[in-house]
Image 1 (cartoon, rainbow, N blue to C red):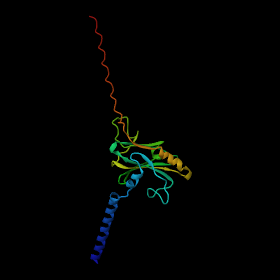
Image 2: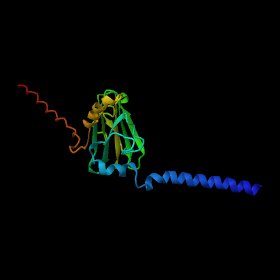
Image 3: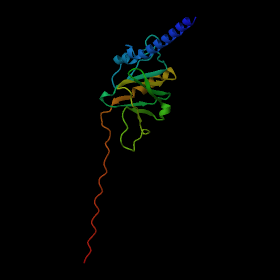
Image 4: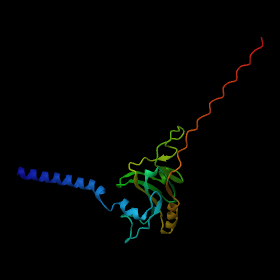
Length: 198
């Protein structure tokens, strides 16, 4: 009886380990992950709108037909990128994913509190007057990945407006270097005091 119980426990533990390893390894060995599926239909470091989800034809699984969706497939090897997404009237969200589909950052229009969601993959400038509160700077864990932009169309008639919002978005490599610190000019030497008469 004890041998049977030991065999059952060992089988359950072995099955659990095999299941866990396969689940963790699947994103790395899958050939049709999101990045691979979107590569032929998206441009690098540019916003590409996806076609609307249809029951028989959806570029990605589980797409919500009430959302207009656009993708920025980024590559940081050419430099930092800057993302700007105008906020739609209903709801707008931006999600950041690594090459292996690990979500590492997300923001929506309500948490941004602005009319345009702006993000930049770069380091903070050395200027003490510019802080992380002044601009959203995201440190990507991988050099390549996906940024998913979504705009809600609460009614079917508002879908063109949601699509136009995402079409006005930009995702591009920043070629211009960050503004250099301007050194303050050295103060002019004080004039010599007048020599008194003897």
